[in-house]
Image 1 (cartoon, helix red, strand yellow):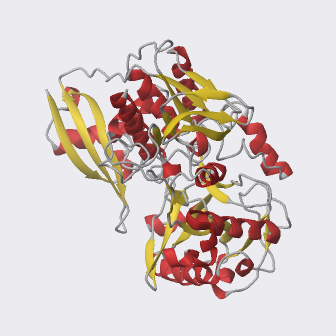
Image 2 (tube, one colour):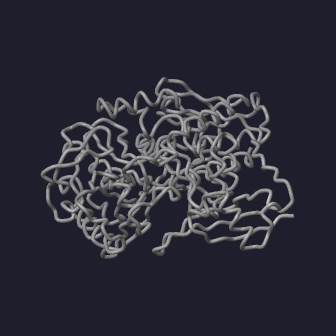
Image 3 (cartoon, rainbow, N blue to C red):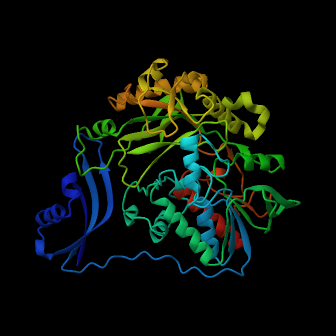
Length: 517
């Protein structure tokens, strides 16, 4: 027989199988020899009180042998000779839409502007070591998109948009650790994602789909209000009356192309700010209320939201045991983001701290129409490039100095590979953003005592929190409201915010394509 239990335990009991078995035996009066296996169904950490607990949901096998559930990939058909659908972008939305197209009997033609996942690291090294930005191969563009080298966080609040469990099971089928199925905040890790992405692409190719790299789309082929194909920078033409547009939130040239061709897009307010780095040990001591978290607790994350004069100021993409990354997508700009490996073993923690923007904030850029928020982003990033000495060096300051409006006289080494330089961040960030961040950090410190310290370093800027535009689509058919056969998809179109939600939207768009065939 089996018995399901919900337990609230100290970490040293929950994280050691022998002690967990002993605890269940004694507390539930089950003979130790009768417990054949304990399967963890859900796992989460509760650090809201001074004593940290682990919440577990388990299934106890009592005098019954345990057979592990096998996660299998779908039996994808071969679609080599099927109707073709163009997928622009090989990020999470693009890859999952391609797989869903195959399952629906359609042939995906995936066009990725960047390089394959094996080739991308050389270009990342060029950014980090030589300050050279390849516009098509960087942290945002290339096989797997931004998701490949931006941590692999799988938590989403978009639970009504699709089957989250299905996304996680597919990732496990392609090589992710099965623990993502039980964790409250699942995470794969930047070091694990490339092989998973490669297996997804190989499956697409093995089942008759096609994947092309170094194929930046530069034009759309339209006949009246219908799409008929695309043209790439190499002059290649790919023809289909179904195109899934899954280019990600940084494909500014695509937004400009849509606007130039008169295809309706809308300005979308986003959030901008900085990325702050603390010692992980300090974050652990604050979050776990202890000097040393010990061997049974993971590096602690944090999530904080404050209202400052009616504006949200909040943490974004927090990376425990992580690294700050150089995420510019064009020469002449500086952009920061963050990632962690699967073990989150680095000695530093970083997080974007960003300020909510409003429509009126973009009035100085109104001549750009729906691209006003994009131009707002660009101006900040270009100012950061100048403040950093016209390199990928990030302008920075110590946290307490930042709050007091000071320029730091010296800076410690941080995890940001191209390096940092002490600078006046008021020359980079708009005045209202600076003020909101300064007051926000003061409020953060009330909730997280010790957070506001000059041992922490602020790096500017964090600007790529989401797409600066939305691309309107019909809520039923998911086609663009004016262009038949064009399916705006994922983060770049304003319909997702992370790997899981982008994957779910990719699947929805593929299903919509299949219905209309």
